[in-house]
View 1 (spheres, rainbow, N blue to C red):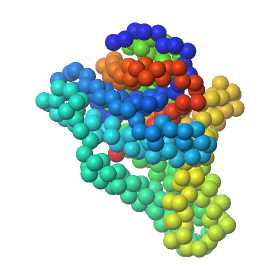
View 2 (tube, helix red, strand yellow; view 1 turned 90 degrees about the vertical axis):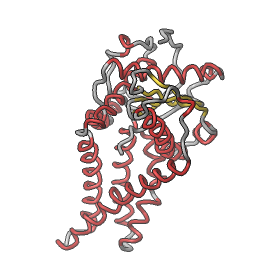
View 3 (tube, rainbow, N blue to C red; view 1 turned 120 degrees about the horizontal axis):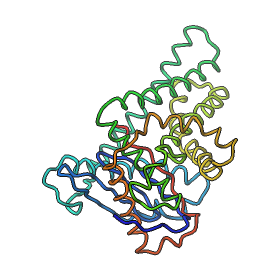
Length: 323
């Protein structure tokens, strides 16, 4: 375990919790560290494609769309790796672990269909039932947004009661605490990391909450202006997501940069409050795994000299896997 003191930080690191492990995303690499059933930690790191590191990540609004895809794609790859290690008694190292394309894309497709069906079509159908009560269209649109927000929070609260998911949420807390320590210039040791909070303003949960709220506003304006039936309404929910993601990411950047401002801090209090559901206090072993993942990224970063990169290389912390 390295105890080196980090330099003045000009790079934002992010990550996700996975099964018995943590993924950390750096400027040009990502790394996953997983606790093997036999007790040791297995690490894997890989260089990211230009989609995740290119100039497009500097373009306002467009970078939010890239981050949304990155959250899904990198998270699924990390989850695939962690599941193989966490349930493989005979695996000695990450080099033997592969990411089958068919499994990856199949799982991604099923996940997206689930999200579209439950969180987009579902609220539309439920809110449309209010038409039977002769409620004004604006009220129906507002009800749809409230239903979607309630389903989002309810889903997170429900799965958090599952023991295995609770452990994932503990790793999520370990990831946050480790990133906090790095950003504060502390040594990456369990003792130095332990005092930091398990919540983080750049958390992917915050990103998703902002997306849900901005979607509520955007869909309300659209439906009040356009009333063309269920098909157009449903299509708008899908087609407007890239725009909503772009706006949401820019808002989250404001929170990350100006979190010390009292007004901005107050704006993001609901985001931090929601993390009470998605993060749990980790044990020392889980923090150790988070450190191992972070150290793997730092090692790759140092090889390419990326620690000299200025703060335009920014990374949003991705959401923990909730499936």
